[in-house]
Amino acid sequence: MAILAYLLLCLLVLPGSFFIVLVFVMAALGKSLGFRKTYVEFLLLLFNYGKERIERAAKRKEQRQAGEEEEDSDSDDASSEELNENKNSQVEEEILKEEGDSEAVEGEAQDQNQNKTGNFGRDDIFDFRDSFDFIQSGITAIVNDQVTQRFASEELRSWNLLTRTTRNYEFISWRLSLIWLVGFFIRYFFMLPCRVTICFLGTITLTLLTFFIGLLPQSAYRKKLNDYASKFSFRLLSRAFAAIIHYHDEQYRPTKSGICVANHTSPIDVVLLACDSTYAMIGQRHGGFLGILQRALARASSHIWFERSEMKDREAVARRLKEHVEDKTTCPILIFPEGTCINNSAVMQFKKGSFEVGGQIYPVAIKYDPRFGDPFWDSSKYSMLQYLYMMMTSWAIVCDVYYMPPMERRPGESSIDFAKRVKAEIAKKGGLIDLDWDGQLKRAPAKKEWKEQQQVQYAKKLVHSPRHLVQTADDSPNPST
Picture 1 (cartoon, one colour):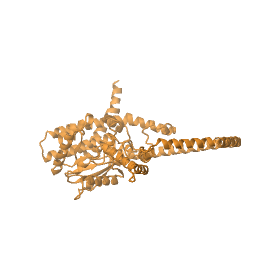
Picture 2 (cartoon, rainbow, N blue to C red):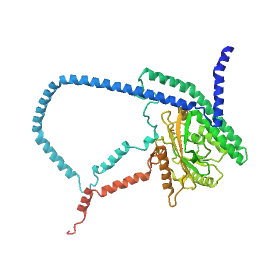
Picture 3 (cartoon, one colour):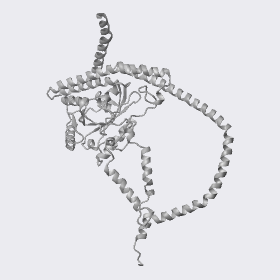
Picture 4 (cartoon, rainbow, N blue to C red):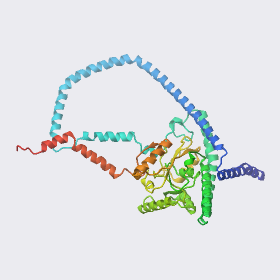
């Protein structure tokens, strides 16, 4: 037994301890050995192989169905002559019947016309045909919906071997099934325990470092120490998701006081950006695991957490935000103006509050690669812990971060126009769709003002309809009487 325990210690504890120490050292130095990039390149080869196998299986299925259709057509030709003879006899009978019933049909049509003219009086204004345009626009809006599809997982062009729920992927070949089974074992029995351990240790490290930094007096040394501790902690947390981040145009990285705005897909957005620079953060106050991180960060530096439902908090947030921007000694503050998570296929309406404060705006575009994992967080469907579980059981998190030149508000430009201009630049840089819809439609129904606008348009259509104009002319008093 002692020998068995010693062997288990050598096989599990010692390699695991070496792996954890190596992760801490690489995170502290901000370096990487390149294992994750090699791992992602291997995954791409695996995905391409699976895609080819799926396409081959689909072609074989189409050829098989085409052969069955040809056999059915040959058998149908043999009985086509008999069917034609039966159809000809039936057509002759129907012609005779129609000639006999034509007079009755004409009489019924005349009676219906008389009933229509008698039922509709001069006071009837509504006609169901007046609503056809609105019905058509409603159906068009449903078919070409650009809003609700932004709150669902982004569609993939090929299978990434993560799920087996799609019927087309239930069974393709024994090779793909074996690959999926091996990948399932690696993700859940090897990667998941390692990632959970790294996430737990990263959270403990962040909490302890911010606690001790919070005990120090305000000084340049504390600011420098907080900058290093923040980058180290977030680099450690990013390794819990096997994150591979490509930073572009780093000369535009936010370093001075100002506001950094970015499109929002996931809470991981904060982790990815904080690995490269230190930010003060602003956002909704959360509970649970996310609340632990918020309280830990607030000990070491100035952050702004608010309740979305309280108007008083919004006024206090605007005041504190303006004070933060005017203080040139502070680090840039990170804001996600969309106010909610979008599935990384589009950028939706930016709230104007961030653009009314003044100062420089540092735009940043974040674009994820969905082939390795779905980073979108549907907060109405999954809790924070469920979302973390999904991220840790995915292959990896691969993304590109594009820094952009700072932008300022032009003379005479409104805050709304400034927000639209910044949003358009972020969408263009990240290859995203620029939408003007409010992201809060994810949580709330359409605004009352939008419904009233449609009602006003419908009323105008009724008033200006030709039938209504004729009827009002008939109802007008006759001068001769």
